[in-house]
Image (tube, each protein chain N blue to C red):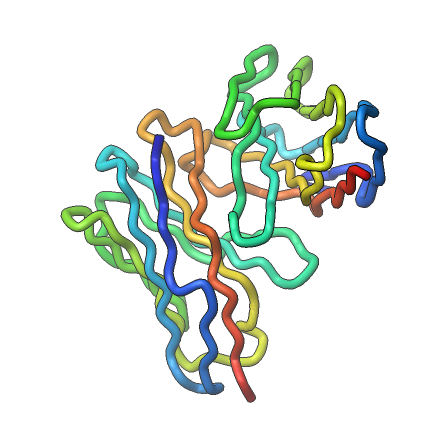
Length: 113
Length: 112
């Protein structure tokens, strides 16, 4: 099993550009989530999904969209990138929701200039 | 929503000594409390977790204690080794079980 795979690993965007961060898992986990990690602030939940076709907002959803058309994939879209979205983004999946172990992808380091 | 506070933000110990990291949470309905270790440039990985019906759990040199009344839980690492150097995050699950709330992290340095 590859686990949770994120692409790309690094990305530089100009302010106002849009992009999609890809996340895929091969563990048949129902629960998937996106976090951003900023220095001194830990991991903050952006959006999550409890299954295909179902998504919901986390702590910091503004400026991001998600969709979950399949169990395996959970892409994160930045609609109009802003410098405040410069961060490291992690995708994670869990077999039974947010009260079971989260398996993280390797992260995407995004810089918005 | 849940509020998780973690202390200290940095911790340095001599190799062989013990390290203790403490977290508090605000939502008495939270029922799952994992600890993640993140090495530099790597992804977070679960090292130990505890549920609200258990007061203590141990796995070799690592232990976690939970005090539900006081709403705090702690990570204990004994006989620390240089490879224990990393950032450690505590977390608590929301009362719906749909969201994790993470602490702000503790950077642990084990000095050989």
